[in-house]
Amino acid sequence: MTLIRLFILAAIGGLTLPLAAQEAAEPEVDLSPKRSEPSPTPPSPSAIPELSQLDEIFKQTSLGKTADAYRLRAEGRKLENQVVNDPDVVAMKKAAELSRTDLEKRQRLRDYYNIYYERMKARAESPEMKTALDASKAAHLALLDQSRVRPSPSPVASPVASRAEEDEH
Image (cartoon, rainbow, N blue to C red; front, side, top):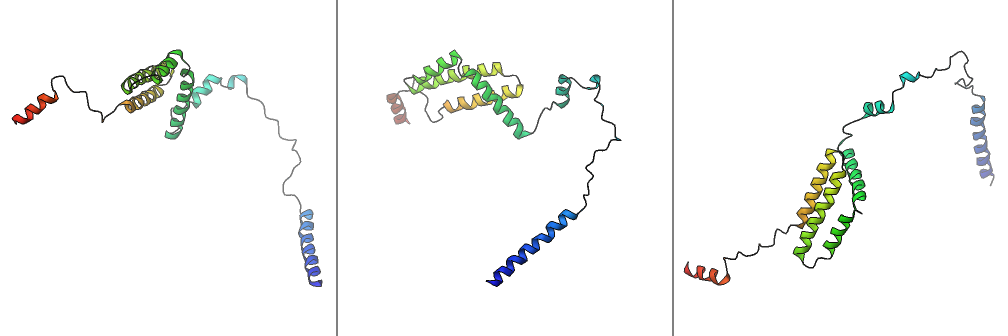
Protein backbone atom coordinates (compact mmCIF):
# COMPACT_ATOMS: atom_id res chain seq x y z
CA MET A 1 0.00 0.00 0.00
CA THR A 2 2.81 2.38 0.81
CA LEU A 3 4.45 1.48 -2.46
CA ILE A 4 1.36 2.62 -4.36
CA ARG A 5 1.31 5.92 -2.44
CA LEU A 6 4.93 6.42 -3.29
CA PHE A 7 4.26 5.93 -7.01
CA ILE A 8 1.35 8.36 -6.91
CA LEU A 9 3.42 11.03 -5.15
CA ALA A 10 6.24 10.54 -7.66
CA ALA A 11 3.83 10.91 -10.58
CA ILE A 12 2.30 14.10 -9.17
CA GLY A 13 5.72 15.50 -8.37
CA GLY A 14 6.97 14.68 -11.86
CA LEU A 15 4.08 16.59 -13.45
CA THR A 16 4.50 19.75 -11.43
CA LEU A 17 8.03 20.45 -12.67
CA PRO A 18 7.15 20.67 -16.44
CA LEU A 19 4.05 22.76 -15.68
CA ALA A 20 6.10 25.25 -13.68
CA ALA A 21 8.74 25.36 -16.42
CA GLN A 22 6.12 26.27 -19.05
CA GLU A 23 4.92 29.21 -16.98
CA ALA A 24 8.45 30.57 -16.56
CA ALA A 25 9.41 30.50 -20.29
CA GLU A 26 9.65 33.84 -22.08
CA PRO A 27 7.47 34.21 -25.18
CA GLU A 28 9.46 34.02 -28.41
CA VAL A 29 6.88 35.89 -30.48
CA ASP A 30 6.12 39.55 -29.96
CA LEU A 31 2.35 39.87 -29.99
CA SER A 32 2.21 43.62 -29.50
CA PRO A 33 1.00 45.57 -32.58
CA LYS A 34 3.60 47.58 -34.45
CA ARG A 35 2.49 51.10 -35.16
CA SER A 36 5.32 52.17 -37.38
CA GLU A 37 4.07 50.21 -40.45
CA PRO A 38 1.65 52.08 -42.73
CA SER A 39 -1.72 50.47 -43.41
CA PRO A 40 -2.07 48.92 -46.86
CA THR A 41 -3.89 51.06 -49.39
CA PRO A 42 -6.68 49.49 -51.38
CA PRO A 43 -6.02 49.12 -55.11
CA SER A 44 -7.48 51.73 -57.40
CA PRO A 45 -10.73 50.78 -59.16
CA SER A 46 -9.00 50.91 -62.55
CA ALA A 47 -6.49 48.23 -61.44
CA ILE A 48 -9.22 45.69 -60.60
CA PRO A 49 -10.15 43.60 -63.66
CA GLU A 50 -13.79 43.09 -64.56
CA LEU A 51 -15.48 39.74 -64.06
CA SER A 52 -15.46 38.92 -67.78
CA GLN A 53 -11.71 39.61 -67.90
CA LEU A 54 -11.17 37.27 -64.95
CA ASP A 55 -13.20 34.58 -66.70
CA GLU A 56 -10.98 34.82 -69.75
CA ILE A 57 -7.80 34.82 -67.66
CA PHE A 58 -8.72 31.71 -65.70
CA LYS A 59 -10.51 29.87 -68.50
CA GLN A 60 -8.90 26.54 -69.19
CA THR A 61 -9.70 24.24 -72.05
CA SER A 62 -9.02 21.06 -70.12
CA LEU A 63 -8.62 20.19 -66.46
CA GLY A 64 -7.46 16.67 -67.18
CA LYS A 65 -9.05 13.53 -68.54
CA THR A 66 -10.91 12.57 -65.36
CA ALA A 67 -12.17 16.09 -64.68
CA ASP A 68 -13.37 16.43 -68.28
CA ALA A 69 -15.24 13.14 -68.02
CA TYR A 70 -16.94 14.30 -64.80
CA ARG A 71 -17.82 17.63 -66.40
CA LEU A 72 -19.32 15.93 -69.45
CA ARG A 73 -21.29 13.55 -67.23
CA ALA A 74 -22.67 16.48 -65.21
CA GLU A 75 -23.63 18.35 -68.39
CA GLY A 76 -25.23 15.18 -69.74
CA ARG A 77 -27.31 14.74 -66.59
CA LYS A 78 -28.40 18.36 -66.81
CA LEU A 79 -29.51 17.86 -70.42
CA GLU A 80 -31.29 14.62 -69.53
CA ASN A 81 -33.25 16.43 -66.83
CA GLN A 82 -34.27 19.12 -69.31
CA VAL A 83 -35.38 16.67 -72.01
CA VAL A 84 -36.94 13.84 -70.01
CA ASN A 85 -40.30 15.60 -69.60
CA ASP A 86 -40.57 16.79 -73.22
CA PRO A 87 -44.04 15.73 -74.50
CA ASP A 88 -42.70 14.09 -77.67
CA VAL A 89 -40.07 12.13 -75.74
CA VAL A 90 -42.64 10.97 -73.18
CA ALA A 91 -45.03 9.91 -75.96
CA MET A 92 -42.32 7.92 -77.77
CA LYS A 93 -41.30 6.17 -74.56
CA LYS A 94 -44.91 5.27 -73.79
CA ALA A 95 -45.37 3.95 -77.35
CA ALA A 96 -42.26 1.79 -77.00
CA GLU A 97 -43.53 0.36 -73.73
CA LEU A 98 -46.89 -0.54 -75.30
CA SER A 99 -45.36 -2.43 -78.24
CA ARG A 100 -46.72 -5.91 -78.87
CA THR A 101 -43.86 -7.57 -80.68
CA ASP A 102 -40.13 -7.52 -80.21
CA LEU A 103 -39.53 -6.12 -83.69
CA GLU A 104 -42.06 -3.34 -83.14
CA LYS A 105 -40.52 -2.51 -79.75
CA ARG A 106 -37.03 -2.28 -81.23
CA GLN A 107 -38.22 0.08 -83.96
CA ARG A 108 -40.07 2.29 -81.49
CA LEU A 109 -37.07 2.35 -79.19
CA ARG A 110 -34.92 3.47 -82.13
CA ASP A 111 -37.38 6.29 -82.77
CA TYR A 112 -37.39 7.16 -79.07
CA TYR A 113 -33.58 7.31 -78.86
CA ASN A 114 -33.39 9.37 -82.06
CA ILE A 115 -35.81 12.00 -80.68
CA TYR A 116 -34.33 11.89 -77.18
CA TYR A 117 -30.74 12.46 -78.30
CA GLU A 118 -31.78 14.95 -81.00
CA ARG A 119 -33.41 17.15 -78.33
CA MET A 120 -30.42 16.87 -76.01
CA LYS A 121 -27.98 17.64 -78.83
CA ALA A 122 -30.00 20.74 -79.76
CA ARG A 123 -29.57 22.05 -76.19
CA ALA A 124 -25.89 21.09 -75.86
CA GLU A 125 -23.48 24.00 -76.03
CA SER A 126 -20.02 22.48 -76.39
CA PRO A 127 -18.81 20.37 -79.30
CA GLU A 128 -17.39 17.85 -76.80
CA MET A 129 -20.87 17.36 -75.35
CA LYS A 130 -22.36 16.85 -78.81
CA THR A 131 -19.71 14.24 -79.59
CA ALA A 132 -20.38 12.49 -76.28
CA LEU A 133 -24.12 12.48 -77.02
CA ASP A 134 -23.50 10.96 -80.45
CA ALA A 135 -21.39 8.22 -78.86
CA SER A 136 -24.04 7.53 -76.23
CA LYS A 137 -26.77 7.40 -78.89
CA ALA A 138 -24.71 4.96 -80.97
CA ALA A 139 -24.21 2.76 -77.89
CA HIS A 140 -27.96 2.71 -77.15
CA LEU A 141 -28.84 1.94 -80.76
CA ALA A 142 -26.22 -0.82 -80.87
CA LEU A 143 -27.96 -2.52 -77.96
CA LEU A 144 -31.10 -2.79 -80.07
CA ASP A 145 -29.38 -4.74 -82.83
CA GLN A 146 -29.68 -8.50 -82.74
CA SER A 147 -26.64 -9.94 -84.39
CA ARG A 148 -27.76 -13.56 -83.91
CA VAL A 149 -31.15 -13.24 -85.56
CA ARG A 150 -31.25 -14.61 -89.07
CA PRO A 151 -32.58 -12.34 -91.76
CA SER A 152 -35.97 -13.22 -93.14
CA PRO A 153 -35.70 -15.75 -95.97
CA SER A 154 -35.70 -14.40 -99.49
CA PRO A 155 -38.89 -15.03 -101.46
CA VAL A 156 -36.98 -16.91 -104.17
CA ALA A 157 -35.63 -19.62 -101.88
CA SER A 158 -38.24 -22.02 -100.58
CA PRO A 159 -37.62 -25.19 -98.60
CA VAL A 160 -38.88 -27.41 -101.43
CA ALA A 161 -36.73 -25.67 -104.05
CA SER A 162 -33.63 -25.81 -101.87
CA ARG A 163 -34.07 -29.60 -101.32
CA ALA A 164 -34.39 -30.15 -105.03
CA GLU A 165 -31.17 -28.19 -105.61
CA GLU A 166 -29.36 -30.28 -102.99
CA ASP A 167 -30.49 -33.53 -104.61
CA GLU A 168 -29.13 -32.40 -107.98
CA HIS A 169 -25.64 -31.80 -106.58
